[in-house]
Length: 487
Image (cartoon, rainbow, N blue to C red; front, side, top):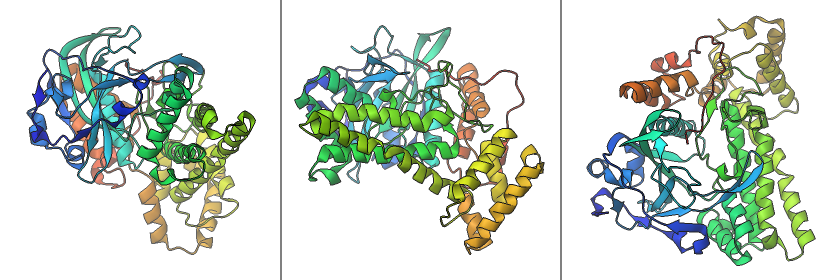
């Protein structure tokens, strides 16, 4: 496996490999037959300090056939509660190449997803199909454009090999960029299979990498728990505010950094409904849209459990400290959600009755099966045609309450509309549009549909004329839309 000259701009470090070796296995990706670059995120590459032109001539890096200078490839070990059931996991089809240090000094993981078997593959082939990798590219980049913390996608290559699932599918590898891949499940793994010293090493590393400001506080591990809770409260609120449904909120899919990670059976909600589930494997609605905040709290409680030996030498005192922090999560989440919803409704200040105003609107939306994104667009631009919600007596009464509330804040109509335009996206990656792009790419080798969609999604608050077509709803269907893990 050849070494690549550093014309591409790689500036890799491997700090994760300096953790105790219980946390990873060193191994190279499995080379592929005939890699072909499908898409390269040139703006992201530039921000990472990489040379796009040189990258295009060295696509073997994205396929695992070449290793960039400075890389020490490894697969990370972790565990997780999957639909409530605890199990040993790990990077079964992913290899961490290293951490790119940008020209600004920021550190990002560079990971190949679909790069072959590892000791954690659990019988899997370690590969990925083209459709799910392009889906992750589209959704993660859309999330970034929406202002939601997320891993990102640098490139997708086809491998020239077939991946066998229900049918034969074209194989692909995604290059994922993340602040880190440290998960709640990483701490669970350390707690169960590591020593207290190894758990402490992981916690210290996490603090140094993500929360250096708490490094010298009196109880740094309690502060670590507190900071992770804060980031997750903010993240989940952002999901809810745009109608994003992760689909598989297992503890191994909750990143300590506060980024959205692991885009499997994810999707965006059309019709507002708290019970919305898209994942084919979530048969009981554990990870439904309305359950996401409470599941996040549950996951954080599992994280807190792993830290107990570090929080206090007295076990009872450690539990009390952890419980106190976890008990604050829902209030923090609600505070973030209320602030975001106020902005979506053009509200600059706070009033006690705001939550009831919001709840009443959402209840009316659910009752009238209103589209979530388009309802707020209608409120933003005063476009009330073609939606059953807006012809109801209940909505007319709600609108009078809302208008009275707007007048009490003494802000101009122009300021209100500006705020609403900035917080209500013109479009989301509608499920039927994503599927349309994936079908064209996978079935016909036509990537133009995806490229056009990505361009529209790149600035969702532009409210441009070309984005209007992406706000249209899918045709009626007797079948509920389903997504799949793509493993």
